[in-house]
Amino acid sequence: MKIKINRNILWTETFVQELAALGVKYVSISPGSRNTPLTIAFAGNKKIKTYVHIDERSSGFFALGLAKATDTPVAVVCTSGTATVELYPAIVEAYKQRVPLIICTADRPPELLDKGANQTINQINLYKNHIRWFYDLGLPEPSIARLKQLKLAAKEAYTKSLYESKGPVHLNFHFRKPFEPKFSTDEINEKIILYAVEIQAEKVVICQKESKDISKEKWFINIFNQLKKFEHGLIIVGPDNYDPRFLKSCQVISQKLSYPILADGTSQLRFGKHNKSSIITGFDALLRSDKFSLHHQPEIILQFGRTITSKGLDTFLEKCNAVRYMINTYGDWFDPADKAKAAYSCKPYQFCESMNEKFRSDNFSRKHNGWLQSFADAEHETIQLKKEIIDNSDFSNESRIINEVLESIPDDSRIMLSNSMPVRDFDYFASNNDKKIILYNNRGASGIDGITSTALGIAAAEGKPTVLITGDLAFYYDLNGLLGAMKYNIPLVIVLINNNGGGIFEVLPISSYGEVFKKYFLAPHNLEFKNFVKAYGGNYKNVKSWKEFKKSFNDAFKKKNFTVLEIKTNSTESLKLRKKYWKAVSERIAN
Image 1 (cartoon, rainbow, N blue to C red):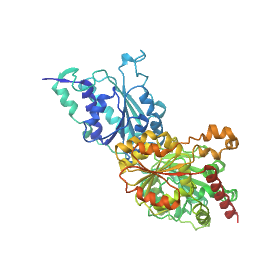
Image 2: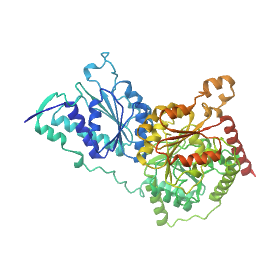
Image 3: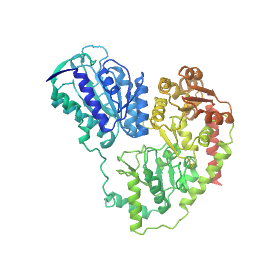
Image 4: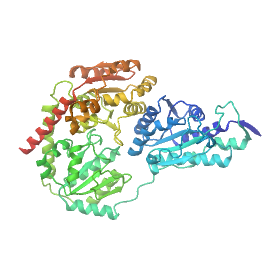
């Protein structure tokens, strides 16, 4: 029996049903003509929730937020031409942070390439410098052999993005007209239809390979022997999405070795109800002190997670000659100074649990020698100085905003930190806290594009109270993302720190260059953001006191749509206060 079909629709529906069976739950789609078959297929699949974003850049970052929050591959669909390039910033960030995205770009048929055809560019491996896997699917063909190839491509895309080499993957789809289901292109045998609708993914067991026993590995035994040998060590925990088992097992290692844990602000270790007795949060200020750094030179360093945020720690590591080992899931190299001895591919919790077991079997114990206590005592001083200098500062100081948010935010919340100063101030001033808070950031490439859209994706996926702490330039860059907030009623609370331009450049030597600095680096925009927020249907408040901020912040969580709380600040004065704090820490430590 012959059945009339549209080969484009048969092709994309087969592909999408495979993704759904594998576990894809979300797709972010931008409207276009050439991607019509993909859009129709995703729209018709009830297992996948669709989000539509006119702006491809917003779409890519929204998908990034969804994928960060769920740790599952999220599909992204766009049309051909420059639309594909608009996705690139989000792909770069996903690549750098190993976030699973399945990028599906529509393309013109081969005969239109290099012929001057409208909306046609070379899309073959377009993202090759920042993609984990690429596959060009060619033109749809209604045959069992080609449909089998398509189904295998769906499986490869899913497994590679999530397991094998976690991160974004790219599938390029070529389509000839007609795109719409009502226009048939072929009459095919019924058995081909039956094969197309048969879900192959259910026959494939998708599971992450169990990590092998590392306790007998030469590199592991070497580190174990050095940890026993060296009394002065540091444990650095950088940004990452750690397994809960890591929080406990890392603390056990710290206590066993009497090593302090320098926990990055976005490491997740500073928050939640767990033992934090050896977690140091004021290390950036401590390591800016020449005297403290001189008297606290480690012999060995264990570094978990990604590249750290702290400039003070970064400078310290550049000068430090300690033996340093990096432990992360994929063995990625997170050392800008390139002074680490090695990077090992191992899940951090597995490393810590195996090391603790090795300590027990070896009956290892270390007498406390004052090393850890000296860090704990210094940490106490930084906390006191934060209270004296930062927490009592006048209204609109940028640094105080961090702890004002942490004091009022509900338990079991999410915080997205924008790049430039918000993520740095959070690293500097967020102390240990028992609230359950999960931190997110775009520190892979550290751009300020797509910050709001990423936060909206996180809020949409989690359904938990979500706060974005952002700057005025990052907010301006991604105003288009607010359309998604309005369209899908996403109750994101945005704390907008407005210092009217590139305040982060205040810390650079160029800041002394007067008018050139102001015109070309600060680049003040003088925008009234209230008008934009209202245009997108959001709630807006120009906050003018700490008391007003607390009330407005608490009220914002009762709203059904997004809220922007704008605090207008002075970047020069804020920098003076940070310097005052750093100087006070150095003086207190010196005494």
